[in-house]
Image: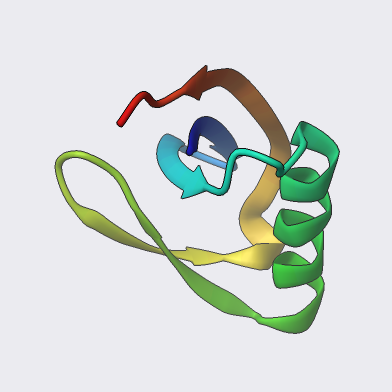
Length: 73
């Protein structure tokens, strides 16, 4: 399994999300999934260690995958 840390820069905030995927998933696949989600939905839910956030897709200015970590079973 891999854990990706994604940073969303909004108009007035910065929100990070941790996403866990299979070990064969690449960073590019995660980027594509995020951009498709932004295109398809006006709002979507992001979960991090502390809370859930509802993000308006139009308020996102920048998306960056900060870190990729391989999780050991």
